Amino acid sequence: MIAEGRLYGRSVKLYSKRPANVYEMLARSAVQFPNREALVKGGTRLSYAELKQLVDRTAACLSENQVKKGDRIAILLGNDIEFVLTALACAKIGAMFVPLNTKLTANDLIYMMTDAGTNMLITNRELVKSLENWLIHHSAAPCCYLTDGREPDKRLYSFHEDLLGHARGKEQPFSPPHETDSLYIMYTSGTTGRPKGAVGSHVNAIHSCLSYQTVMQTDHTVRTLVAVPLFHVTGLIGQLLHMMLVGGTVVLMERYQTEATIRLIQQERITFLFNVPTMYIMMMSHASFHASSYDFVRIVAYGGAPVSKETISQLRNCFPSACLHNAYGATETTSPTTIMPKQSPDDKTDSVGVPVPVADVKVIAENGEPAKPGEAGELYIKGPMVIKEYWNRPEENRSSFTEDGYWKSGDIARIDEDGFVYILDRKKDVINRGGEKIYSVEVENVLYAHPKVLEAAVVGVKDPIFGEEVKAYIVPKSGESPTADEIITFARERLSKFKTPKQVEFLDQLPRNPGGKILKNKLIEMSMTNQPQ
Image (cartoon, rainbow, N blue to C red):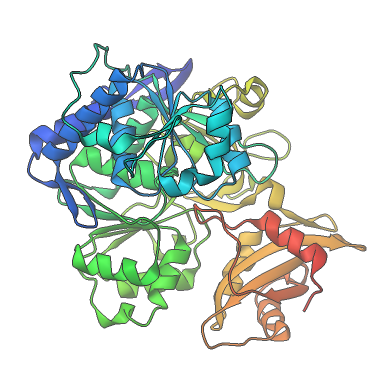
């Protein structure tokens, strides 16, 4: 049931029946499904009862080390069990965890920990190497606990023994967090300037998990393979916390590897997949993939990048029993804003679905007025899953949120007469060719239809006559060698002349951030130095 309410001063829709905080989601599942598998990583298999026991022990360890409500705990780990234990322990005692991207430079990591004012860092010996000098010599650096090793030095201590040891005493008294309390600070993967810390709360995460459960109709029988990073909202919210809510099973992969993913899907009988499109393309292109049947997979979800109609057709053929769900969201919306419903018309395949039940979305045209159905403009989003604020960014908060509570997404979209949302481009990536607006997704969808194209990305490059021209970067399918003329001719037959790529360049792979999003700024930089082919 959904009711109108107020959250952070905004009028929003709220799920009437919801857990009080994120830890309660785990506690409920531990009561309802104590013996069901909750978490699997390698040879470790934890039931819900065992997972809750370890989370409680971790919370006791943190509280004994003077971690209290509102403190910030940085987690610099891959998809490890210790990541899960630390995050859920923070959720229990009201501390905020700060998940850090393991592929960032030391300077970026130090900036984020300093900006967030972290009290503690949980990491491992490999990942801490680049930070050791800072941790040892800077008084403002957080104390550091390692998940591996037994030889602490003056500043680096072994967290693993504290985490699982029995020598520790009882938890310090604390009051359970309120749903509006902050749960984490997740730094956005911005392409310009310093990243911003998006402050996600318990109520944000709870509503996102409930939206996934409602739309995808998930329950305790679902098993999901987390191959995307837990330090992004898809892995953290769409899979891990989502499963804690419904009592499903989470199988962790340290990092995505095509052959290992295919093997784990079969071995663990994974029923719920949630990946960026590139991962599916790589799987379906792998020789071992077609040696098995995947009729046990019930849900195939994807997001984070445009999906071609050809890829969707392949997914339907490869996962014949699965419902396909395109999903759209952002760090600021705690994962889902829209999800493709289970029953959707074939002519909507290029849509990212309809708003989740508690979301309000609208498109604002260039003149600042609400757009008409089918008209393009910036997508504005409101709901209980939208973050309250950016950490220590008052100017960003004033410019990014409207007075009536909408977050300005920066994405160009249109909404059709049936309420389906279509993402056309990032606002900053729209190509302006002599006054004509070109949305890269439209061009990319055409290029994906070429039989020799595995992946495509379109950007605007400087042109002395038109200001900008369309350039396509192409990753060919294995064994194929298309020419630039071949690609341009194919596009010209299907697009208006001004939308047809003028330049084509071939790459072995497209540059991406760890969340799978194509870094178009990197492609534009490449275009400034590379000669067109």
